[in-house]
Length: 339
Ligand code: PEP
Ligand code: MN
Image (tube, rainbow, N blue to C red; front, side, top):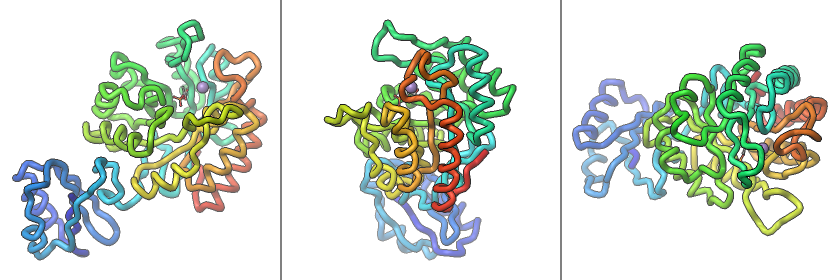
């Protein structure tokens, strides 16, 4: 349920109303907007008398939120959320480009790619240390030593890092070392992992599950937010369809759908969506034009010999060209690319 207070309601009255609902055992989120202040009540509101609440003179309107996601709901928080990733903002008018290899392979590789993507205008370095692979015989990532190599690339460039968390056992180390914690498509409904991510203080990049509906995806965000962590960035990375000429099908419509339903920023992964490097640019353009708040792109210094996802990786030259177009389209959409 949301309780919308009248424009100009003073801080004392906001506090008084918050305390009133807290005394009834609700968790109360307060959103101070330009036009009004909204109290978002979390808890079982079925027994609340809406008419009685309406009678408070500072209350403009009371509305129930029928969707199962509350904290992720735009009705709960009408303005766009802007997530700060160690100084790089994502959401609202802030557009962020995350780029780097699918997996960290060596010090030289990650440090070189970090310098290349930074020069081209990326704001955040991506790279997997733990790789959730379909086959147990495929390269599984370098694990914690890989994460340490990524930290060396961060030290050299100053770029914040995003990398995938696959197990609660690494939460503590990620909390300490990672700027943006990625939950991969395969773990979007790993509810214990989501709850742990919700107890972290670092922002979370939540990728859409392979066959997840937008509502299931928002419910996964709700798991994180209900534990206290409100800094969630959603990532559309293509869904499974009957098409075989692309790895997945980029669901462009999910971008405006999520933006209408939720205040959370939405970025797009054109690499895992299309599965081929030639598709990265057109899918990126479509994503920005549809309102995306950022991109996460796989870039490798030697795609032909990459240990993972080489065929969908751009080389640094291709990434530079992509960034020129990204800057133009983002500008047309009223967004500024964060570096
Ligand atoms: C990745 O970004 O490295 C990755 C494995 O992506 P996804 O979880 O979307 O498949
Ligand atoms: Mn990959």
